[in-house]
Image (cartoon, rainbow, N blue to C red; front, side, top):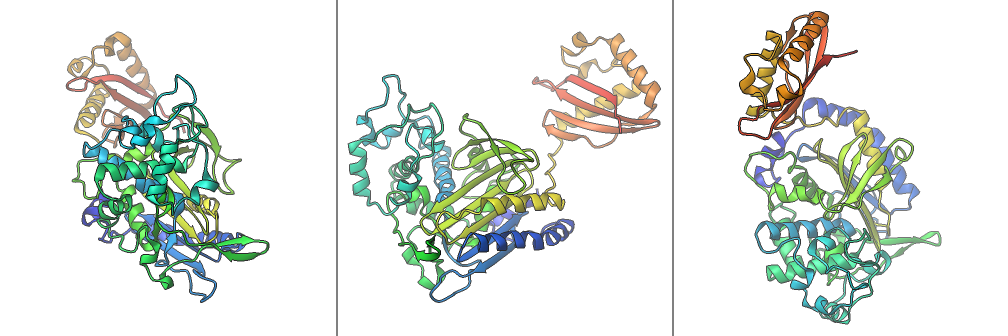
Length: 498
């Protein structure tokens, strides 16, 4: 629980990485630096900043190139970049925070808070009305709108209202499949403003950014001096062209946030601190349970190749869009939450590995230059260096009690005398005589065992273990029943082969 302790001061405290981890990270850094340096040059990005967050702090950050091509100011951890669609996680968590406060439900109809939607014409007579949940997961039937949506950032709120009053054409029936919609997240921004009673940007800045100490982050980019900002460029016809700076407006909720690497690392550390679930007091601006909901959402799962050079041939992911995050199970990295950011003048990517407490992010100041490939390759470099050690779950008292009974059963050579620890199905599935024979055969092969080895919890009511014995090893697992007292419903023991 070291990470949680480090977050009690809103990410302001410094929490050191284990010495062994720090050494492994240091060994991996030269190769990771080369990944991003090559990407910066090959992708024609004027500037790039990337960072690695582990155990609640920014353990490595590096700037490459320049934040502007006129004055040649170097890109640094304090340079301010627009992070485009990585903004969507801030919007999603704002909705989830309002939900935790009882101010809305994810299954509320969006038109409850955006009344202009009530007059919309749906694509079929049996189309369901759009829920807040549908907007969060890009399953509201709205069309994929990246090229158009990005340019709507500065749209005045009054113009957005008129657009809503006119209605929109649907791409499909709501709830039928995934289709990425910036327009949908602009609607979420309107919902946040309606429910909170303040402009969307103010709500995010006051309830998320300020508590996390992200003093250099916000939506109105002209509130910061020009010499702090990474100026956005497009690479076109063999040269860089400056993109126009878009002011904050009605579509800011889908991609308008500006931040620095030093600020954004606080956000990444806060998100990662939500795993695993535990009893420690909540210290962040939103409950840990709400943060973990970012990994929930859509049931429209697809198989996708891993980003980066190590991906397609090695691993295919089961991926879906959660709440403001792409959620995937990776064959090497476990649970991952990721999102890219493509924007006129900017490209970015973030990927989180909650099972390991590690996150990687990259910002660039070139249009749609996301950096997903080097970010994921960097994650694989950390994995190969042994940095990504899975967090162990604490053993609950119920599991410890059931595991102790397992050791007594093996020592006794049968389940007689342990009936009070057995669920009602246990002896129906295999009776006392069968267990006596099974244990006798096992003991004849491996002999007496040390049954005090640690058990690895799979949850509060399940775990696995390995015993060292006189003539070998025994592999086992235990599953407790969902009853008062949590008796043993299943016990598996077998000789562990090398």
